[in-house]
Length: 158
Figure 1: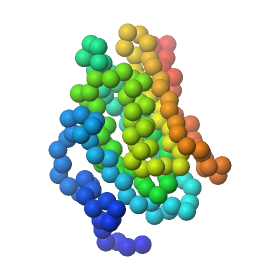
Figure 2: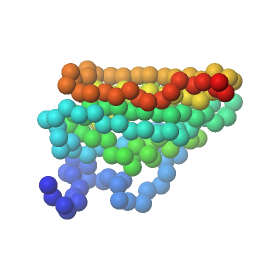
Figure 3: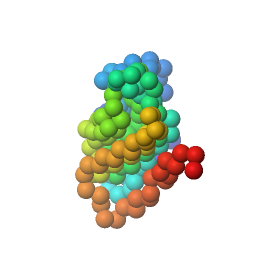
């Protein structure tokens, strides 16, 4: 394996290693992908975003979630800095919990074409009701171990 960093011909303009502006909305955010060097091996990759924030589209109040994104890569890996910037672009975006969670999953799936992907959005209560949203796409290969997402159900003060 080479120790010299190189840009992929498929992704010549990665945000990684560059100073970039924070995108102001999800549509303006760029998700980068890099070639999967283990494309002949089934494995699970997980991203966890415990401080995801968006806005309620009705009240404009902030909504907070713990997101867990699991995927079995196909030809591409999701580059983590671009994911961080994409998720941050929701900070001033008004959308319901279900829409945010599913839109993130669909956008990632479109960009990296995984063999399987699931996203769990564990939203903190507003109005006393926590909302958990789950979406997945693709077929999970039989030889892949998928751990529990590890987010405990909301219990309030109990």
